[in-house]
Image 1 (cartoon, rainbow, N blue to C red):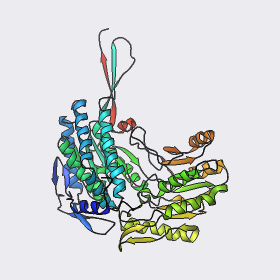
Image 2: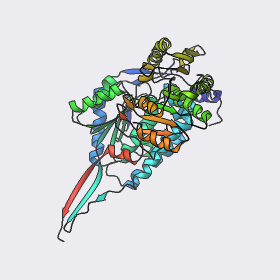
Image 3: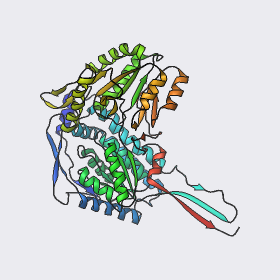
Length: 498
């Protein structure tokens, strides 16, 4: 697969069949209304397939199916070893269909197929495997009571988990929510982003093939204002996990208060700072990763390192290194292995990015990029863009652009760098580049971010929690800690004759 040429990928893409119906109670089905919307390839503007436009009635059907499955115990009370075996099978099926899963995400939202094939799809399989292996290795507790008392503390599944996932990593974000929720024994109703529902629908089909019982994993495509809102307000959804914008995350918190006080776990926006100090010995590596941290996935990453703080004494030389790297990362056909960046997800997002860029040209120093481009006369593509000498209060440095736009801000002292980095409504991630161990520890300790990466960017693993602080939300994906979102602590107290 890694040897696939541009023509190989185009040939495989042409042979794909797309699932566009909702997946409810073990079956593909049309929306109750019969409505559909088009899934569009942002690289070409071509319609891939019509997709079921589900709404409240379909959410009701999916939640009812999930509740029935949970109550009769077909999954929630399945032996841990058996549940583990099913999820391991699902991981294997994702690996068996790796090319297809990669192509679905690349065609649906514009990411490079090579990234989808080497990062996203293998990552999905890995996370399902990791949580499968955790199922029979997480133990409950016995409280230290006295004679005559036995207090058992167990983690039990919540019931029906709603998941609303974004368009930037369609398969991986669906996996981050579903794998942990399913491992804990819940039923899941997944509402994927309307811009990129195709891999989630195929995942549902693979889950059924792996042996996940009917009703346990449901995928309901549709728009946020209808299907997403209905899931957030549903009185029989016990928990809702969300990844997306801060504004929508706040709406789901409101929906909880307006309905059944369901738990809501938001992972929301970001404007991650990257601090490069003059005592960093390998500035080439720092420049490589600074470029990766903002231009990977076209900058459509919630934790993208979009604010670059560089110590003033090295700033000009460092910016030159970045310009060279940006100019080598021009967008191209996402199916071409030679491309370094793909397409922006849709026209609306492209126009939003360009509004920031055009305003930025009036207030900061544009040193490279800054233009919308086309590939073969088509598509939603934006050049990798760098603004230098950006004022700290400039919208370029304050607002989440969610595109390949980097703001460079000089600093004079460590204290100034930390203060500016923390002066944000967001706190998802941060990076620090230094070869001074004391500085690395000191600065990392002071940064208000869910993950601080030292001498790298955006470090994550199945073994460590991912999530933010402040208005980046408080949900945590990945690691055993994410199981806490999808379970409740239950005490069973037994009196006996000592």
